[in-house]
Length: 171
Image (cartoon, rainbow, N blue to C red; front, side, top):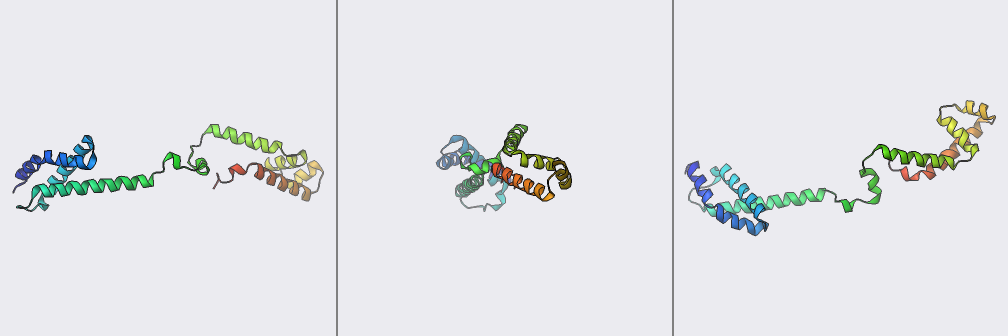
């Protein structure tokens, strides 16, 4: 059998394939897509068809396997995609888009944490943050270097505690 004869025989079975496809899909548009996929595969692989065998059965087998493969592909794809309601509250920071508006809130939180520091911790911490060396801070405030280091350390601990909500964002 040549390819032209085979193609005309395959097209003759398209209506019975369409009704068979509706059993799988329950939707006429999806059934039409399944028939189209089946016809395309049959025409593409016509050399695999053995003359004298049941063409209708061969087409039905192609359709059934095509439907099953498509179904498995959809199920596999959906298992990898996270649905909106499945995103936990802790992962919202990771999945959310970053923008400049967020920076304003972060700066407000940092300023709030700084305002909670007493002057004895605030001044050495901000000076160190601005780039002053320990000995320069010590000379300016007229306190020992060890006290400067301790006050900066205590200020950092206090800031970390106040800004604990941002701990996992950097990781």
